[in-house]
Amino acid sequence: MTPGAQVAAAIDILAAIDIGERPADDVAANYFRRRRYIGAKDRAHIADHVYSVLRRRPALDWWITKHSVDIGPRSRVLVALALTAGWRPETIVSCCDGHRFRPAPLDEAEAMLIRGLAMRTLRHPEMPRAVANELPDWLLPYFERVFGKELEREMAALNVGAPIDLRVNLLKADRETARRTLAVEGIAAEPTPWSSVGLRLTERVALGGLAAVKDGFVEVQDEGSQITALLVDAQPGMRVVDFCAGAGGKTLALAAQMANRGKLVACDVSARRLEKGTRRLRRAGVGNVERRALTSERDKWVKHHAGHFDRVLVDAPCLGTGTWRRNPGDKWRVTPEELADLILRQQQILSSAARLVRPGGRLVYATCSVLHEENEAQAGAFLAAKPDFSLLPVARVWAETIGGASPGGVPYLRLTPARHGTDGFFVAIFEREPCQIES
Image: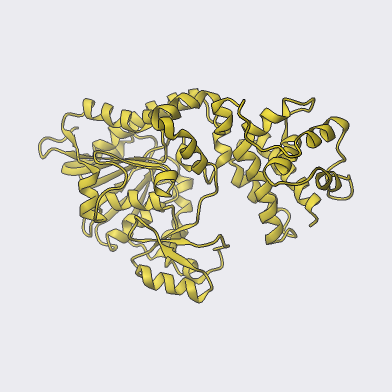
């Protein structure tokens, strides 16, 4: 493909993202699936254009509003080419000549916009703080509360692409064996700094065809997510619930910790999501998982199994602010109303899941969010409402399970891309007093 054709494809994908409900990566994958003639290198260039716009949309729009040009996928891509890709005005003009598969020629206003951006940088001192940090305006106070003076540093880390992390499947290999297997296929990987079962690739590669993946030696999983599963401290022979299992990433990690011994129940309100994890479970050699589709967090199954489990993991639905490195398009879809609904839902899920914990057992609450309202505030509200649970310091559990000092706090664990190189994650661990069981 010509550079112009790559630019046209990026504009088409961004237009589809704007009018649809699906995540950006799903839209892009569907676009490429329908056009199998687009090679891997071309897909990479197109994706770079798309994600450059998704990550930097407020700053791009700020520049566009200073000219008589409509804000949209086309104008955003043009400005991104000038300010983030460093294309010269004449290069942009030559790529937009209207020839087959290339964008239509620039009109007068667009040409003035591109010429006016020559020698400019993306950031400008007059930009509002939310714009300069690629944040929706309404979320700025929430991020300032959490990060304060570190906001710029944390947002810079959230606005770059994430590395590819792999979790070694201990049912089939140890970390060094998995690393050697990858090396045979020409893939270089280094141990992750925090997770004892993690490997980080030194460069981005396609993983689908690798023997280490097909044979179930490794699974793609961010280091922060790996750490969350390790802190559950699921041991062989235990009875464990993954209450919001989804497609099963943490379920797989818990099964490996349990060495396939004991009972592990993967619950979710979506039977389709649970079904999607079937192939992954089989590939990983997991044999101790029962999948359970729930009608809601208060399904009768929960009541019937109250007080039966040693460990219950609640990887709660959240705004997903900690995953923006991977899903930058998500930040433009979230709303204050969605956050309010999620906070209420988190409380309901946590309260119901707590019923499953046996006396002396543990409830682990986790989110991939950086917001105080979804994290520390939820943990505090739970403790106030459930006097038969007490907070178990994460630092203590870290020392017992992973070893060494917790890098992300003592009472709770808070991981961020800038400080730890992971997605944003939060973990709170509660222990039930060895007394009565809630009915």
